[in-house]
Amino acid sequence: MLDDWLALTLDGDTGPHQGELAGGRYRTLAPGVLELTPTRPAPQARSVVISAGIHGNETAPIELVGELLAALEAGTVTLGAPLLVILGNLPAIRACTRFVETNLNRLFRRDLATDGDEPERARQLMQLVDDFYARHPAHPLHLDMHTAIRDSRYPRFAVVPFTEHQPTSHWSALAAADMQAVLLQHQHSWTFSHYSRHYHSAEAYTLELGKVRPFGANDLDALDGMRHWLTCLAAGRAPDAGDVEALRFFQVAVELMRDHPSFRLTFAEDVANFTEFAPGTRLSEDDTGGGFVVGTEPLAVVFPNARVELHARAALLVRPCAAPGDD
Ligand SMILES: [Zn+2]
Image (cartoon, rainbow, N blue to C red; front, side, top):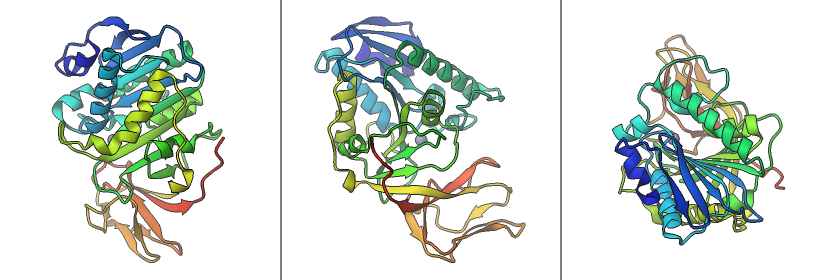
């Protein structure tokens, strides 16, 4: 059943389902949420949350999850670690849209006060993550997998959410998974990976795995490293050690916010992530005379999107930095 779970879930059959697989058992906890529990966790096992489809049109990560579940079902991978597998925004996945009413990936905060389908889903997922880490507190890890709207100078990169007491990161595992860059955030952003990092001190990343494409049009070969990492985690094995020197590190310098209805970015809509702008370049403007001009150091732009909701983030401006200490 596991290898059908994605298709069944997207067809509206949300269970409950449960069963056995090599090394353990599985059960559905909610629509699009599956817990896999090993009979005997491997010595290197971590408690891993694997999420995809938090943005509904980002399909490559969903296909990776499908491959992993099929491998577990077939017994080519033996379960050795507790996994919580999450398909985030089911209505948006079915509609092939980023979201239905609002961006799910800024709603993961315990004091969330808004109502609606996506806030309700955020509350449900937060509760399920809380329960999972309570059952499996050892070595928590959360990989929230996405694809980006636009091209990127580094198609595969990890975003490290900000918290005051930073949990340890293992850069060599990211390098082995063929990530090309790491972006360190400088303030709280209420994403799903931030939730695990902030509230559970989990090692957690938002992983951008190339560009948005429809189901079937993804180049999964480019994600071999990521696929291998997921396999290691499911089996409870330590990840391979990659070359950290090959990773480029960036830190956020400025968040451009859309704080006025007339807000606009001055550069082309299709500019690639990590495109650099020289000192003195105007990057945004609005009808009140506001706007942002690059200061004395060049800045690179990541996730530009002028059409976000009012008071939401329209772009991150980043600068290169040294790798923070590994463990
Ligand atoms: Zn996304």
